[in-house]
Image (tube, rainbow, N blue to C red; front, side, top):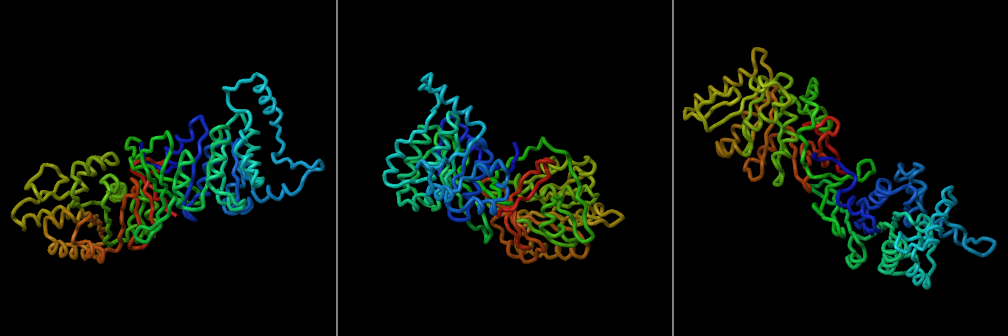
Length: 510
């Protein structure tokens, strides 16, 4: 299993995969993506010849303008313009009857024959062959509703096969004919869903109408909020009858006008095509992540100090999705890394994560991990700094840095977990160490990368000194990243499906 983007949560797919008719209510404030969700659900999960979208708020041409992908013939045939149907009913045929609503189709004779055959054998236990109009007829004693009559005709036309119908929106019908939403939903639920085996998707214009939720089989809510002043979207699974809801909320985006949600982060480490080095530019070191390089206008500037702040709920695996590509890309270009790991990270686990993408000797020769609790080590990548003699520890540090630079005086990546540094040195001395590190980085054209975890006293000072300041947060089990310096929108971190682990993509939350 790996984290990936998907059109809809698995729970919704399972909900509609049942043989019986199902009804789903979609609610949310304006701009949260209700129409996008409904249209895409129709496109991806319903048969083109057996699904319809009744638009009561805007004309079909307005929909095509807002959603260009609807222009495809397969989707165009499914859009039913409520306004046009209403106007059409003002004109009658010469015999005084209502004009035919369902257009002729070469399949109609075959379907009609099938219905006649089913009727002739009297198989009452089989699928329905006529739409139940009992409740609609009672409601129509108050008022005629041509668009609803049309949908009943279309559902019956497809029987005994299953139909998927979207009504966008419920209020568009109820306000037009001065009826209660509860009345309309009850009629549609009983006639079409329960007695005619249709799947029904109802879009509500209001975000909160709790008194209607009990009438349908499923309820989801789309919402749009702010996180640190940046847009965040999510879908909440409030009710899905007879379907297990394993995750109540999912992060989502409407990138390119398409609904996309994000599954929980769990990358498949077994599926990889190795590491593809991304070259540096004259002024920047690549982060190893193309999308992040683009976000930072080239990557990390040479001679810069860069900080990643890790949110409260972010796991090591989640923030490693950004850190590992940075380390890999730097090391694979024959450059060294000196590291003070954060709490929870260990030299052996770090080595195990990087070794599959390089030769053992590359790691052993180009990586030095500081260990302040041991006085000696037989492992070349461990800097044992646990001696009581500070001058000896400093000498060990300088010797290792010189070995990493080599005769060519190559740049190095200074990787520091500030929680470890603050614990070992105290916040006052740690700040002085940081000032020295930043100054040396800028002079030597090295690359500084600091990791901040929750609860540090150093956070504000580090933020002030950083050239680049990024935050990694967890939203509904999906790791996300956004820039404070420079300021950016939120991006979801997902495994690159084509290249596999540890390559990642950043998907904007728009």
